[in-house]
Structure formats: C-alpha cells, structure tokens
Amino acid sequence: MTDTARDGTIVSIARNARESKRQMGQFLTPIPLATELVADLPLEHHHRVLEPSFGDGSFLIPLIERFMTFYEGDVDSRLAQALQNNIYGVELDADLYHRCLETIRAKFGALPGEHHLIQDDFFRWNQPTSGSSEPSLFDHLFDFSVHPSLNPSFDFTSFDFIIGNPPFGGTIDPLLQDSLDARYGFRGGEKIKKETYSFFVVKSLDLLKGGGEVRFLCSDTFLTIKTMRGLRRLLMNSGRSEVETLPYFSEETKHPMVLLKFHKSQAETDTVFVNGQRLACADIFKTPNLSWGIDAELGFYFDGECLGDYMIATSGMTVGNNALFLREIRGDIGKQHIEEPYAFEFFDEPITLENERTKARLGKLTAQRIAKISAQEAAGETRRSVQAVRRAVPLRISLPHADYRHYNKASGNILSQPPSHVIYWKDEGDAVYTYRKNANWYLHGVGGKKFFLRSGLTWQLIAPRLHTRLLPEGCILDSGAPCAFLRPNVPESELYFVLGWTLTETCNHILKTVINHTRNIQSKDFERLPYPFWITEIRKSEAIAYVRSLVERAREGERFDAHSPEVRHVDALYAVPNDCLLQMRSKSFL
Image 1 (tube, rainbow, N blue to C red):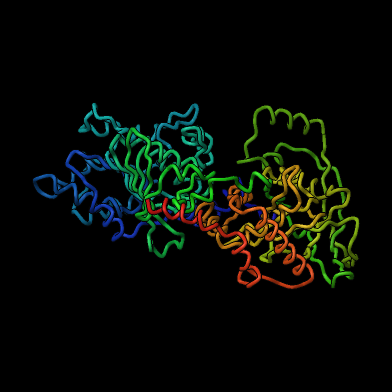
Image 2 (tube, rainbow, N blue to C red):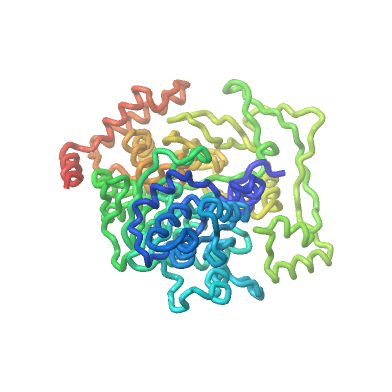
C-alpha cells in the first residue's frame, strides 16, 4: 500500500530492482581519463598499487604499461613481473572481471598464471560471517600457496598508491552492513556515512602506507553535506587533500564528479585545496558541517551565532500512502470543500511471525522478538489495524471540518501561501497513526510530531534555493516541506527577521556553497546557516517591518518570487557594513 518511501530498506529494495549496474553503483571510467590520471603518478619500480574496484580495466591497463617499463625481457616476462610485483586489484562484478582479463590477454598477448587480480567484494576482506568457513578476500589475495612467488615478509596492508573510481550510490550487501558500519562507520570521534564510496575511502586509508596517495574519482557530494562531515574530518586528520571538479565525466552519469588526491601523513593538515583554492582548516572548522565549500570571505559569516540558536528545524511525517489520507482543497476561500472517496474502518489483525518479518528492517528480527511474536501468534493475539473502504460515491465535505487538518505540502511559493491540502485527522490522526504503526519499520517514527499545529517557517526539501514562507498554525507537517520553529523565549518578530534573511542572495549563496551544495535542503541545513549578527538593532527593526509588509501582501493574494524587485530589496537590508567588508576582503587577500 506504500506509494513513496525514501529511507532504509525501501531504498535498498528500490535499488535492488534497478539494473545491476546502478545497483552496484558502477559508472565506468572512460579510458582517456583513466590514462591521464595514471600518467602523472610518480611510480617507481618497487611501488605497489591497488585498484579496489577495477571494472573493465580502465586504470589497470595504463598501470601495467607503466610498470612494464621498469623491467627487461620479452613482453610476457615484463607483464608477469608487473602483475606479480606491483599491481593488485579487486572487482565484484564477474562479467567485468573476466572482460578485464580478456582485455589484458588481447592487448599483451598473454596473462600470467599468477597475478593479484581478484574477483570478490572489496568489503569482504577480513569480514568473515560468524560460523562461516569461507575465506576472506585478502585470504584469497595473499594466499602464498596460490601465489608462491610472493614475498611473505611484505606488509600487504600497505600500498604506495590506491587509485580508481569507487562505486557510489550502490547497494551494500545487507549481510555486511552492520559489520562494515562497526568497522568503518566511526573514526576520530565522527560518524562516517554508510555509503559505498565513503567506506571505500576509509578502508583505502587503512590500506595506504605513510607517504602514500589515494587518487579517486568520486561523487562531489562529500564536499559539503553534513552526513559526510566525518569523512572530511578523517581526511583532514590523516593527511593532505586536493579536490578538483571534473568538467565532464561520461555519458553514464550526469552526476557531478570530482578527483580526490589524498596524501597520507602523520600530522594533521592545516589546508585543503579545492579547485586550486587554498581553504584554511581554521575556516573549515568554523562551519557546523566542516564544509569544504568555505573560504576566508565566507568564513566571516560564521563568526557569530547560527539560525539554530534561535530556531529548531525539523522534518515532517511520511504518511505512507498519500492517496489514502490526503485531499486537495477545492473551491474559493470561504466556500472550500474536498471529495472523500473512502470510509475508514478499524479491525483486529492476527499477529504472525511471517508478517512481522516482512515489515522488519532487512527482514531481520532478534531472537527475543521472534520468541515474543511466536508466543503471540500461538495465543491467537491480534492488533488493531485500519483499512480504507472505497465509497460508491465520494462524499463532498465542506471545510473547515473537525475530521480534517491542513497539511503542509511542499511549494515553491515564498512569504505566504494558503494551504492546498488537508489530511484525514479524525480523533487526532488515529487512522493515520494506526496505519503507520502496522506498516513497514521505516514508517513507525513520526517526524516533527511535537511541532504539529504550531506556526513557524517552511520551505521545499528539494529545491535550488530556499523558498521560505510562513507556516500558519494548525498544520500537520509533511516530510517534503521541512519546517523551523522558534525556540522558547525567542520573540515572534524573529520569524520575520529570519524569513527575510533566508530570502537574500547572500544567505542562499552560503547555503548552496558552504552548507549543502546539492538540491536537498534538510531541516538541519537550515539550523547551520549563520544568523545575521552584523545587523544593528535599527536595521533589524526596518527589516522586520518590511518583511511583515511583504507577508501581508502575499496573504492578500499578491505573488512574489525570488526575482521580484520587492524581494531583492531585502538584500540591502541584510547587507554587511562596509567596515566588515574591508575586514573580510583583507583576510581573503591574506
């Protein structure tokens, strides 16, 4: 009955339904790009290079060619020495693995019997399942009975270079997720996001020896978003990072890609380079998300408080099936109505172990839960559930109505907008809560529940900028339209002051440069925005009065957008004073 869902297992299910390429997060590197990245590696004859997701061999072929130049003899001899002494690789996809081996045979005329190109999951090394006798990836990779020519004294957890294009957005094997999270999900006091490329980076840092370099093509998402804060901190704590945005990657993906060059050292770095620009870690650490989108000039804005000191931001509720409970408001103000196609009936649903498994995260239940559910099933216990029964003829219901509440659907309008939908909310949402409680695990929590019916600010979750508007009292909150509410004892006028600030070009530039450069604008992104501490009390009063006037005009039916002259006038009201500008620019120059 679920129409949309975005987190946890449902995402894994959706990804598993995709073609294998996208499920694995595979976006193969074009050969010219891979060749270019290998060409300037400062390789020496004794170096060992790992490619942890080598695909069809885009990086391996130019690596082989370069290492073969360090050896003498015929092609077969030099190829064997390069593959046995210098090059190591792992590939999960069996088809790509064998395609790569065939490419090597075709190009060089042979493939030595002993090499370190392994078909396996990079994440499975040293991750044996409890009670399993299956050897790990590195047991295969460095089994001296299989590769007797290897030097047993070599530390195989130390590579001079690790290069490649790790998968991103792929599905991590559900059987490995918890163990990988335990191993790679927390470093240096920070959480590492459970994502394929972030865990690839963490594991690669573990395998890299001091003075070595990781050179990865990867998604640009790790530059600013909060969930990648831990990865950024780990990189800063472990060495020096350089990031370069790629103007073009391939036709396989339109997602922005970057080249990460990481040099491992014992000392923490004080600098990160992004597109040739030096970012001081002191400025990076000013930002709540340790952003790699900051610079010295923007660092000024984080010298004071953040919006989170004045407002609490939250996501809303995922209904689970909008068609069942949401209704579009029809008619003019004063004569509004909805069409209700359903009657809601409660019934007692038998509790069964099979049903509970289908709704559990990853289909897994603890032994204690299994025992409890089995006992309930044996005793014939039931739980209260709800079903929607379609009416022969929909009811026409005039608004307002006691059984319905306004629902805060996402909108691109700013300043103010009349509600467009209501949600069935009889007996304080009994039917909705009952439906969610008996649905899959990811619907059991109710986002923002304690803020339901309160006034505040709201905006679109997916948007290129903040489309902020006042949220009137009496609304149930939707997950697609995050909201922010005043903290206790903060005066109501701050709603208008913050609303005006979020409509400025400066605020939106900071949001999309420093806080979160993707199209998502999460609730906590809002809290991390700087508060306009540089505005004098006189200017603040002017700004509040002006924004109030715009809100009233919007309530009366006038429509504004981000480019309206009246809205752009707000920029001047929140401008940084000249003396602060001079300070910012002098610091940026230094």
